[in-house]
Image 1: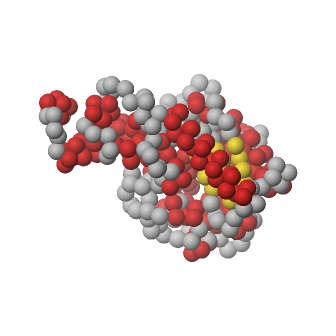
Image 2: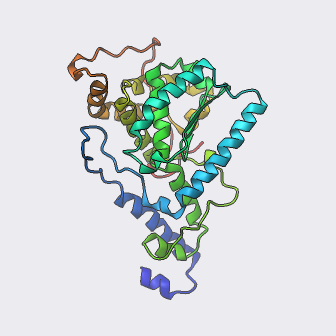
Length: 320
């Protein structure tokens, strides 16, 4: 395929699009195998650290710099609306304390996390939303805390999930895939290891907060987030009640739920992997797994989450 394309100086748009699509799909598949256990590591989630190789089209430094700029703009807008919590805000102090416990467990998933200038901020808004941008820029909206009455364990699951998106560089990968269609035939050889795309920056007008993740991305973030939080001493069973609570507010048009569908299949996947993370939690709190107390939710009548209604294609970005 490479020889034919290189010999054709004017590839058709159809041929180029087909080749790019194949390249974009093939590389993530090649990088999706479970990672071997690290020295000194015991148990936990087994996924490949770092995400898909497609992300390499966009330099990490470029997307982290853009994230810093967008995050600062968001903070300035919140300040103008008197919505950015001050350092002495009790809820913000609580969030930062939880984040501080999570951060030591991020490097095993992405070595760059050691260099990131992590920030945790609280924004006053009725939005049920949270995010972690590339480079460790975290924001939680008060609507998420207030409407769901989140416990510390549940906050750790939310924060772990959002941090996992950054650790796996999902935004960088999505940005890279959006760039592919605008690059031209040269990207084919670049994707397969020829040449250098190190100077490429994110396309003009792109905004990280508008990038949409796929179901595969969301599932990966769920599992890695549970792993990180459990190692930090937070009960991973809170991930179940978190998404049950999300299901209760699913009819409210919550921004978080437009890209994080709360469905039974999602909860079933979390339950399936619970045996992998409960021992991490038990070890963190110095208690045998069989002596962990039953988990109790702080809200009654949670029940089942609704059936998933999003896109069934695990690689395609979810619809808003």
